Length: 148
Ligand SMILES: [Zn+2]
Image (cartoon, rainbow, N blue to C red):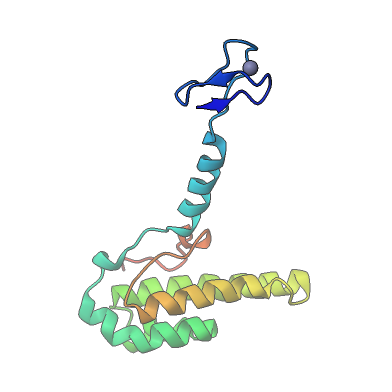
């Protein structure tokens, strides 16, 4: 049981409105929705299953190095002649980070470069875990096609 916050009448836990004064209990739906939206931005599609585990293992070092130094984005494309699907996915993510960090740094005198840094760290974490998860927001861009 609880008391109506408006008039103080005793209400049952199951009551969603007060009969005495017309007060209506508000559901915390809006907050929950916001939390879900925020989570869905971070919870990007896990594409690990799309790639060959051996291919991923072989490219792991370039995955990590490429997220540390996105300027190396082209390496996974060169070492296997662009035949590695995971390599192509990596190159695409890293190229986007590279371009985004250049643009963001230019328009903000380096301050917004920190945004790219966040993507880089996420990329490194996924690479170390052996996962291929799209990075938030930017990952929908496909500059380098996955399928040749
Ligand atoms: Zn009331």
